Length: 487
Ligand SMILES: *[C@@H]1O[C@H](CO)[C@@H](O)[C@H](O)[C@H]1NC(C)=O
Ligand SMILES: *[C@@H]1O[C@H](CO)[C@@H](O)[C@H](O)[C@H]1NC(C)=O
Image (cartoon, rainbow, N blue to C red; front, top):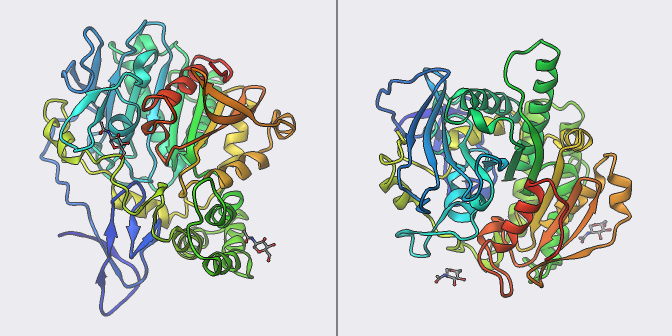
């Protein structure tokens, strides 16, 4: 086993106990924890046999027959090589209807370090993994029903992407994704999608990725127009963020509230809640640490805030429940894992490494840079004010990025629509007459709380709806530039 590094000068390094069961690694028992001075961090054992990369170009397998089996629907998977040692994995599915005019939606899972294949196989791809993890079935509520969808594993090192794992901030990730999209649209097979409306959809750590990437794309467009950057403009029209971490200072108190009061059950005892509450507000506690991080804090100030808050607030309050769906004890086996399945089709789709759900090196790079606790709300406000239609949504059974925190973040936003937004009352959101959530909207901004859904909202069902049916409705409405509307 290779080692990435050891923190500090120490005598008895302990091998870091790192588990990647769900999206955010569990470090020494703490979900979203960080390595400490005695920890020896294992490197990913994911060797790449030498491949002939083509920097600045795509390498593509077309119509592999995997996952999307609807007759006549185009798909392509492969790599965009940023450099000879940095390859970004993508999987493109053309819309099942009118692909030439349909919008193009990008999908990013979070982590940091999580593969976007999670969204593809567990949430909203053309096929979904079965409960026994053995095979896939066609998904009637796939997001490519009406939109072209491009799943991207990023940054380099995540999922099937491979090469130098140098990215440690959402800003650096944005720049690599922009470079990848330049390569994608330069390819003759995909150039035709560049003028179509572009939508960016993401979840979880995507509460940082979404706003930061979108703001970066818009600023690159301005620079291209001004002639200071050369490249193709990205026609960004839509941003969608599910169960996202955007503004930790406004979101972390939500753990304390949700643990004691949510639609399902209390998560821990009153004394645990009260002790987490003092960890939040006591001098030098979580609130003070995040505040210092926001006020120009160094990477280590922000790193320490992640360490403290995820241990004494988030992890302590999770109790025995699954942090991604509090209706079940940990670990909830749903959504089913697809590790064996995806690795069994990997050569057919042109993937060059063994797939893993998350990359710990990437996760730790972001922790060291303090990225977790930085504030992406200003970027979100910039994007909303620039006229990009934005939907923030949250499944009400998720604890890790619960709706209490996300709604506080949304209420604290400062955009051209925020005053009008805050004066709204809730409107029920219906799909085929079935109430499935509640929303508020103002201008081109909306927030939607979805009932009976865990962290991966499109993986769930509610009332008489099919799996992912509610998610497909809001995805289509927003991606096509419309307001949320009940049906
Ligand atoms: C798969 O598991 C989920 C969650 O436990 C359950 O609701 C669903 O009915 C199962 N699906 C099938 C086809 O058995
Ligand atoms: C946290 O403590 C503050 C100050 O004591 C109190 O006002 C608040 O209600 C507590 N919050 C919860 C969720 O218990």
